[in-house]
Image 1 (cartoon, chains in turn blue, orange):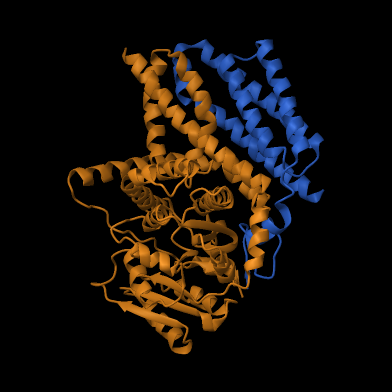
Image 2 (cartoon, rainbow over the protein chains, first blue to last red; image 1 turned 180 degrees about the vertical axis):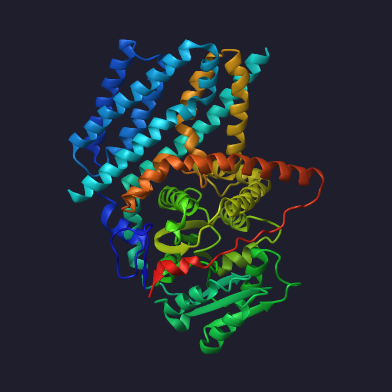
Length: 148
Length: 426
């Protein structure tokens, strides 16, 4: 008996297509790359510091970016995949994040009404890029990491 | 003065959200670091542990799915002579009783309890207690009628009982009908975060692993000590989880003991199911709040985790409150608003469904070997928004019923279409 469908991972085991059998047997234990995490945290700290001292972003936006960097690095850098890919994704994350927050802070600065609306909807404005970028990163790492 | 009060309240709410964020961050890191490996190694020594097992299957109008699980029960690899399957036909008016009788006639290990509409239909806890009276195993497992377990699930669950501290076990629940539509896909993501990461981390860290009501079970002696399931509770599974912990027992999660379920397929069904979960969970919080804090059985870490788990369904209501508070703060240009929202931005996804933040769901999907599911993580935002009115209404109704001393909660059973059969190929 086999379970079919998109929800089903690509490999079938003797029990049919169950998820954890494959996951726990094959993947766990290989998912903690300390060197990559250490490098990622150091690298993101340098980038965040550069953003803060350059006055390109406000303190609040800089803190949001730093916090997301920390979560992003600690959740994606331990996974399988080349360090160069992860660093490239982190750099892309910085660019997208800083541009996104800059555009919205410029819009908010143009009018008090818009500023109030943005401060009310702030979490969703930030989540827009954070979650999307995290999703894209995982998709890339899931493909390249396993192929490698 | 008013602005200061609002600011303090807002920051307190943000503090609570941050506590949950940190909790789930630690869970995700724990699973990534895979402290489970050691546990697995120790468990492998206990594969010879084979007690007599009773499996309870409560069923009310489940003619579309009952045949599937009974067929699966006959395919289990656990020795037949140590297995008893008790189906509680809980006042069904469709063909459930007839189907179960046919199976029972041909297979002596299947036993049936027929309850009429008047004696049955009092909720799952009542049906389970009825089944428990007939159960003669040292271990009692429970499965919902719409579930479809692995063939070796019983061995995988039962071997944990070789450890005398273990009073209950919980297997993994995955969605069978995931490709059906967007609702089933999002529920599948919630399940990934909730089981693959959340439950596994809690079990690995020795915190409060939750018995999910199905795909798991108890030591018979523990059930006897506790007096079975509390029939007055809507969330009888969460209630018995806390009663087991307060009695000094441990619940262990077994990720490999996997079981498919038919998830709700519409937003309306999602609302009904989550309303029942949230209201039931809140009832349990009111019931066990004091006992958890005073408990001598639970250590400090377990108490903190149990406290956070108990209050998880209040959090969407707190999110709503913080949002409402943010309006006057935004108008008064409060300096704390933007700082608070920085924290909320990252933690807001922590209150979706089984309380699985985006990184928890993503990590779970990655560990499961999923490649495309990550794209839908952003859409969990929909269930997050949907859970706010669900939990708020559940809390309002619960408070109202407490004030009026009137229990208005009826056990609203989730209906199953049986469409999950199309995802199983013989």
